[in-house]
Amino acid sequence: MKKLIHTLILLWALVPLNMQAQERISLEDGTVLNVFMVEPDSSADGQHPLVILMGGGPGNASISRDTSQWLGSGFAQRGWMVAVPISPNNRSFRGETNNALVAQLIIELQKRDDVAAGKVLLAGVSNGGMSALEIARRNPQNYFGVAAIPAVADAKTHNESLNGFPVYLRIGGADQLGWADQFDATVASLTDAGVQLNADILEGAPHMFRMDWSTLGLWLEEIR
Image 1 (cartoon, rainbow, N blue to C red):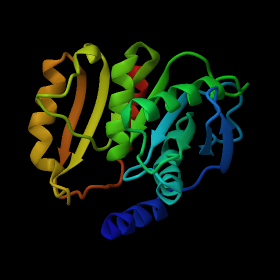
Image 2: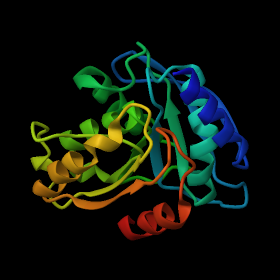
Image 3: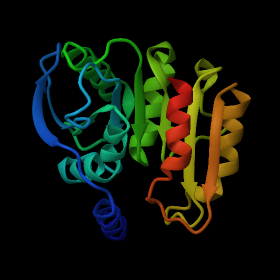
Image 4: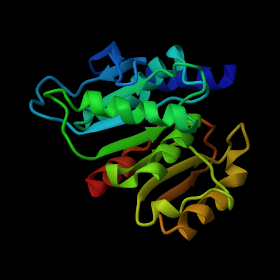
């Protein structure tokens, strides 16, 4: 984990920062989520599409902050309003209860004048990517797609609800957790379910890697 955090810090140093702020947002069920918000450039007026970006590991404050900086800034530079929620129980946003918190967060954020209504993008790193796929499976019609960078699945994963749903998947070829060995099974699980999959394995890349915006940027344009 220390090596992964060190890698994330190095990646953050390579990315210019957009305006970022931490906010406390009250949800309908009474939960208060701490959320790092990364706004598009001040020159970009009007309403912006929303991306919920979830960090890896437990999704705690330090991981979420770093994720908002090195990856959230890239989305913001492309016109997205970025929200990186901090897990309230150090379990990322996995599982039914935490999945539901993200759905409530979207409702609150879309009440803002600068956030567009309608579909939202889900994105996540590692455990956050797994969370994004879980949330999408529940109500795929609410989302543009999922950017899972990375995530894994297998033959037992129920992806049937994602038929026709866009997913961008990248896994490092030198992933320290062995996720590269699960790439073929993950691709099979998603394609067998009819997912519109844009997947690749990045040779020599670790578990966390510098984002290739030349491909992710094109994918974002396609799904909108």
